[in-house]
Image 1 (cartoon, rainbow, N blue to C red):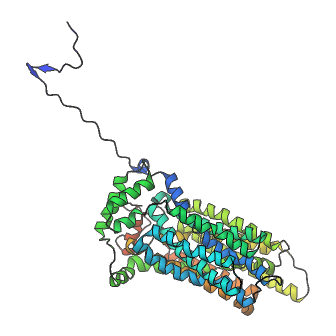
Image 2: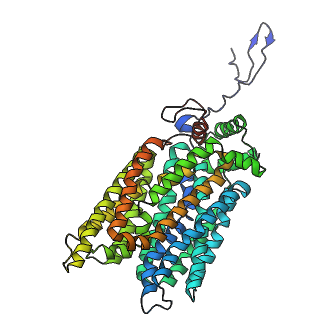
Image 3: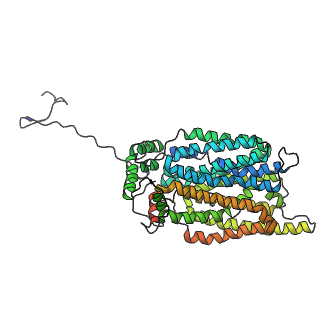
Amino acid sequence: MAEKSDATPFIKNGAKATITKTPEKPAKEKTGKEGRGKALKQIIVALIVNIGTINTGMAFGFSATALPQLKSANSTIHITEGEASWIASLSAVGTPIGCILSGYLMDNIGRRRTLIFTEVPLIVGWIMISFAQNVIMIYIGRLLVGFGSGMVGAPARVYTCEVSQPHLRGMLGAMASVGVSTGVLIQYVIGSATSWNILAGVSAIVPIVSLLGMLALPETPNYLLTQDKPEKAEKSLSKLRGSTCNLNEEIQKMISFKEKNHVEPLRTPREIIKALLAPSALKPFGILALYFFIYQWCGVNTITFYAVEVFEASGASLDKYSLTISMGVLRVIFTVVGCILCRRCGRRPLTFVSSLGCGTSMVVLSVYLYYVQYWKENNLPPQYSWIPVASIYLFMVFCTLGFLIVPWIMIGEVYPTQVRGIIGGMTTCIAHLSIFTVVKTFPYLKHSLNDYGTFGLYGGLSLCGTAFFYFFLPETKGKSLQEIEDYFSGRIKSLSRKNTQTEIA
């Protein structure tokens, strides 16, 4: 009997069977960890976005090495003590204006375009300082640099948090703090080896690189959805996640949340004000405003802006420039450590480490400075000169692990989508106003309370802040942006337990 060909259809009861092609099983959608986007893509995007935050650190660190040079007798532009305090603090005057403007621009022209626009005043400001012929030109340059630094703060953090998935958001959101610490270190290292005007010229390179990098990135999917552009949002998400991500599931969750909560663009001032006064915006704003006040008044930017002078006043026997550079290195290292810990430990524990650690180390420094003054008045040599150096180093470690990271991450996490740009800008405005008040008042506090009294005040405020953080600071680690918004708006009661609602990055 002839062997049947594989092509011969099976015949039953004299009739040919209907041939139907077995449908291919649809590809199984990836869920859970398998459906996550590529971590490397998200890391690269976060790195590009946060190049601009290096400028903020450079604005902070510039005065530490530039002021001693400008005060010296052989300086081409000689400045007084009062002019020095203005140079140190003027960048923080321009910053709040930039914060408010960037908040408005983020919600109107988008996160990406705002980040591109913010580099222009930074480039102009650094070039103006570099070619300054008088102190007025330095003032204007510092204002522009502060203005640009204020503009970059909120959009960099909001962009990073909006394009990152929950399991990466804490670590990637902390990259802005790494950028700031890196900027401070750059100023300390280059400033100790060259003149202040060359330092300013070199600093102009960073915003130029940042501008070019932002041109290659897409707008955030969250912003595109608020503008009713779902196709563009999905295209943006595919660029940000890669082929491993379940794009359809993630974008549908975003759309579902948008429809459920009626997330539409705010068209009129009345709508904007109403959204800003809603509990979902007002509650986190109050928490973060007080967080920034406590964190700035622990004295971190006093040490950052006046690092060389603080080491000189402490009576430390080692070279003050070497101590300043090593402190900058320490800050960068522990900012990276803080990024990793933020993913593992959460926001609250790291905040407690900072408030207690900073407060204790400042009190120790204060007590030592009291004895420094006693020794000077009685013509006695300083003793145990390692104590102030250890106190300042420990202070920087404790501050970096929590204060320098947590509140900046939370700017991109805790606010509702509709006004995330505006209120994020308002929050960075509050933060930099606190910086201005601390830096500007430091010389006056020194004259009124002496060095030991000033640092004792900083330490006391940091310790008192622990109680506030314990009762009011929520834990947002691992929670989606929508869960956090639901919590502050009252739709869910707690963030401490696993929420069954849909999770979206």
